[in-house]
Length: 239
Image 1: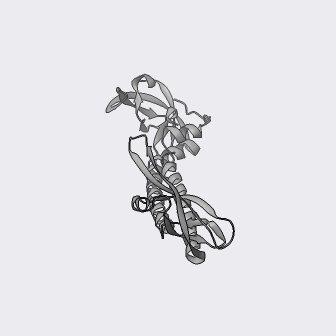
Image 2: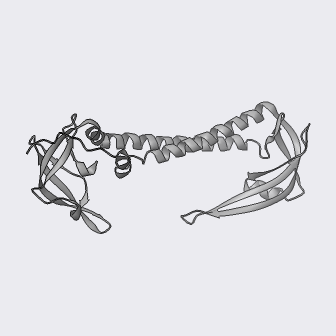
Image 3: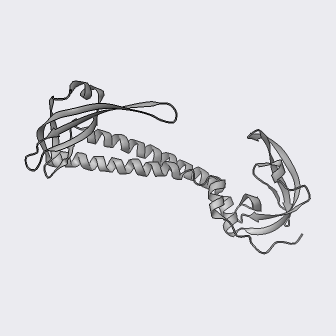
């Protein structure tokens, strides 16, 4: 068998999706979102702490909002609409999510303290410390998602590093199929197989999981990409 010299153009999008390299980006993206919200809330809490001014707010209305997620879980949100008059400027009317206890204690027409930023009354809170507490909760979720994303990045990186090196600059060789080994894995009710081969340099190799109709017959000449660091070969159809 003669070695194949030319390399086939590799679809990095296919590598990214087929080998689940995209998976760590999901928790990392969630960490970014939660982290951004946490920083915003922490900044709000800091402004209220440094520039906070007390006023009295009047509850105008209240409502309960219930939503159901895709898993059937119901989330209940208690909301108050209130108005207060800052030391300067027009009256401010706003809505805020509150605890069930605060919701129950403040029917429409009742009065309650409110804290707002003196130079920006739109930044206010009707439950003392709510911005700081919520910011810490969001930061906790950001850290958890970040840890999961980092762990998945390391895990997938170690498992797929050989594949990526082979695809990017591995040696290209011809190989002859020596077998199609059935495994105990089934996907969508179909048994999965692994292709085995011997390449032009005499090295043995084995593919990932495939359905039997997707594999070439024994004796067929295929192309493999060999990772120079580990010596592992990857069937061209896996890249």
